[in-house]
Length: 309
Ligand code: ATP
Image (tube, protein in one colour):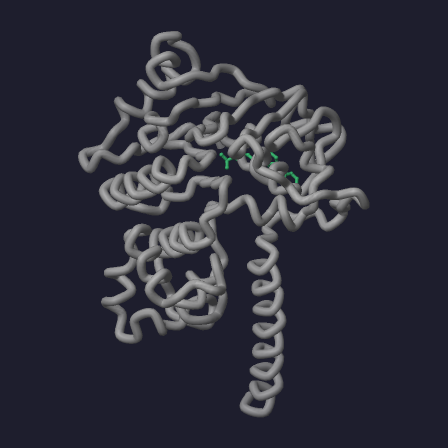
């Protein structure tokens, strides 16, 4: 048994190394579900945010498999500088919209425009530089917390890293760790909670300070109190800098104050407007809102959400 365990251990570490380098690569390119086949046009120019970051989908049809369209003839506008929420049943294509904007895939028909430029005609580098995402689950580097936050802007000073962490409501937690900002995280480092991870991702985004910000269920792992205080901080940053932001959310309480709420169903927009307008219309959003409000637990948390599966 002893003789066998040596090579097995060795293989284990090779496997871990391999897995890790793949993970780092993934983190590096922010690849979670990436299609490497997306090609840059030879005439690609740098994206210019002439209108402050207006996003438009025009008659977009897209599916991961040809015979199964997820988005069907979808048209929508996310006005520059506004906070927009995308809601709808699980699997209806909310995250897909964000992936298309990042150009992990290209649309089959229709087009996606940012400040009137078709995203297929701008350089991938300039497009991705303009966008910051807090995904559902953020992969962390096997490195210190400081390094993981600084990934948002490698030239940031220690003070800037700490300020970002404060705004993301994670500074006090980090300070409380024995090694503080030097604590190793990632697969080989300290285990941190999903909520802490989300706040590190938000710190990273604050540091990157991109003109377009996407939050994909970005605060879902937080308790209601922490979530509210983090959302308030995010809102104040968005307002202060007039950033365009898109929130994908299940819990409507986290997005009801958006400038615009887009309800997606069967691959297209079922309803859109402000919370007050949508409640007034008494449609899908209104039904969902009332269902979530009545299922609120004692701690103010929604016990059920709009997941269908
Ligand atoms: P949720 O609210 O559950 O996160 P969503 O509305 O964000 O869902 P998407 O993640 O956009 O939904 O997925 C839309 C559909 O596309 C789902 O049916 C999903 O299974 C499918 N899908 C997502 N990613 C891929 C992929 N890489 N390959 C094939 N199908 C995919």
